Length: 204
Length: 252
Picture (cartoon, rainbow over the protein chains, first blue to last red):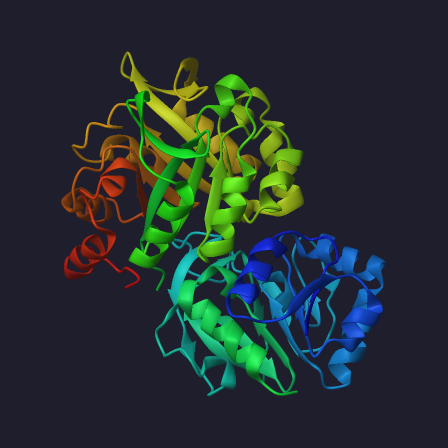
């Protein structure tokens, strides 16, 4: 069973629907016990970092997620959920992340070519920087759907895929059992479903 | 690099897809859920669901249709129509919408954009503007194109982006339903004024109209259309191949 961590940030409907579509057994939960008993964890997230991090902390689930990650359970952060796996975010200030992955989240503004629009919205091609089981059903150059204005940097040891948007933007990360996608697999059509399937199938 | 997006728009009324020609004489086309699946399978990059009557009649969106669509298609869904307060964002986001477009709601209450952007992020808030030339000026229209606000369109869009709108849908009422190409003059003016993604709407009649759009205005990110897709006048796989062959980067 996969526990989708519910800490009050939206858009779990599509994530649940996509997991159901691939036949995965998933529950949306804010229960400590359910998360602890799950085989895998998905940490979703949309919106602003500070607000989401605060909600996760207030729910007390930040410590649960951290403990589960350290115990070796497979988990995947999606979009803002991926960004929260890192040490710090500089979105409207400086906020602590979960610190499960080395790196920080910074604004694309001022870093990428100023002619490029921000947010980075739309379908972009994935370039694999390391082989990974998440990519077993997709191929180099397949497109995924991105929506973000901040990106993970200083994370060389965990990045497994990038997307070209003025620079090599971190698209997917993995360090042992802790995985993350900047793009939305639940909104990336068949490519996204294939990534979720690979995650669901891995034995942890 | 990021691809240009092709977006079918499903105008929904009473759970059915309709398409207005210049916003009048509404015609029933098909089940929105079936159509959404069909488009997703054909390679549509995103779908827009508009409750076209909501602004005028205060009708809430048919969230059942949205939910059902979000259960079967896994591409981004934008929802518009009848969005007046942040609780309306909550309502549609909970049913699987990814982005919410505001039109009349933002005209009535411009703070709606900043409130929603703060709560859900800029990328979630789309300003959609129905625009028509009135005595040589671009005017913003409210209530599904029935009410001239008198506001100049480009400065209105700039203001909305300043408040936090992360994307702009520019719907030209002058070219809508005419099928003779997008309103390049209007789109150019908007593209020069804002630096968020711009979605062109109104006027697509054939694949060449999309090619012309993206070639002449490289800053336009997406092309949106309804009836030409619904009636099969343009098949999306065919359109995308033509775009690719013309040097436009698309997802195939």
